[in-house]
Length: 640
Image 1 (tube, rainbow, N blue to C red):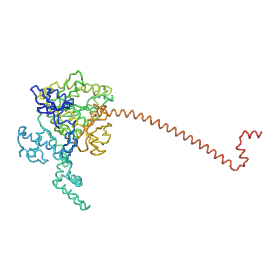
Image 2 (image 1 turned 180 degrees about the vertical axis):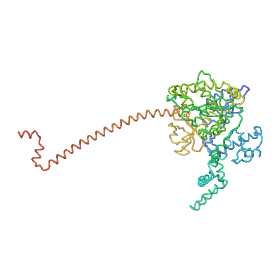
Image 3 (image 1 turned 120 degrees about the vertical axis):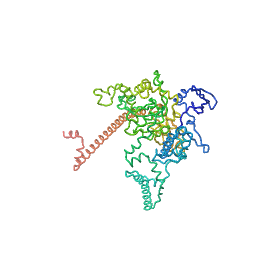
Image 4 (image 1 turned 90 degrees about the vertical axis):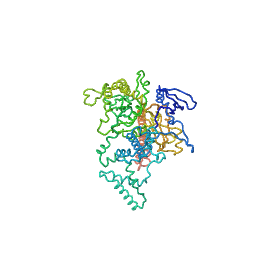
């Protein structure tokens, strides 16, 4: 992912028109030149940031709205930010390892030599000590990677292997051979007996040879290099845990990335969750929420709060992504959302290192890939050592004491502490009201207050350092949404794709059908806080297309949570109407059946009477039959 850097020569797209920064004066006034008509405009940095926040400014190379065409084939091509989600696990692990080597090299040689000098054998020796389980390449290779990394503006995407650019994804190993490696070789190597790799290799070759002989098959035997590459591709932690046990693995990897001294803002950013110690009211359902979770992001250098997110019922990975989006984007919504408050929250930007605990949501592949795309390092603190996450852990207590403990409906830290206080009955603060109180406490109380550790107010410490080193932003707000989006698959047909009962379609999707087939499976990336549009691409392709909902005006600003509540309410009313209609239909059927059965019984009784009369008439004379059939009145008259 490219980053937005407002320097001389930067090509920008402002309101769909190409501009170039040609000069920046000492007052940070930017002189922009229109690349089409040569017009000149002056903008301040705050004005450019406002345009960026409104999604009206982006890096020119990030403009995906205009299609590009292949010169040879004439086929339409669309811009797609490179993502780790679309490379193999092996390529992803290799790119991360290359970045670790480059950053470690920079640490060993220093920043100045790292920029001007080649890598020496002494550096590779240090790297071998730091990465004993990995094969360290030659100094020339590391020098080549370092130059690519610097040339791309420290963009880790530049370290993805060339095989990805050539389109080769996956292994060339025969699937049958890979099956034997998976079923026979890896269990031998990943065992508590810690068998040598050579033993596992020999077992695989022996079983394949025996299979070929017994079944007259021709499964190729893997080479030693192929088998060893497969073992090196295994996650180091998983290998260590399988061969040495969990305790040893945790101990070995506990100090990953620790010990770095923080010298500037966004160098180290910590993320954590904390339960809100108060019962809140859901604005949509008006029901009491018994456990709302607050995800917080803090800058360690300044102790300023970068962003937050509130989730209901757990702490999924999406809550972390929502908090990241709030932390990275400039907070230009304050005057619109809270008019008259005159609040300012100038903290934003991409962190260099994100320190996380070992919750399952932090270990999600989607979250790690998103942070990698943003050019940030992910560091997990060792288990059972919360002191290495101390800044955010301490702030969790401060925010509950400063806000949650003051609210009606306070839940207390332990249920036993409530005694006779009925928290649920006292609850009356909605989520939106809590967010306003949270903003007020952070902006008016916490940020201006002198911090006991730094000796300065967090907001002053942030502003002072931000003037020297401006925060780093992604190339566009859309690119940030793409990097933090969720990933799924759907079937593409003439109706487009359906996601969460919303139909998405466009002419570009129909072009994909014409090229790949009438009905195909496609990859879909969406932003759950705004269902107006999604990104769609054929499975395994990097050419994503932005597609809007068929009735997109109905979904502007609509989150997935709100959409699900709408569907639930509609289905509840529809289900009740359907239940009543079905009951009426059953009653009608029962009435019809009862009438039919009554008619059948009447006819049956009549027929039975006729049969009985016929049986009684047997053996009578013709005169007796006639007399029996004659009217009784006539018989009585004759008798008289």
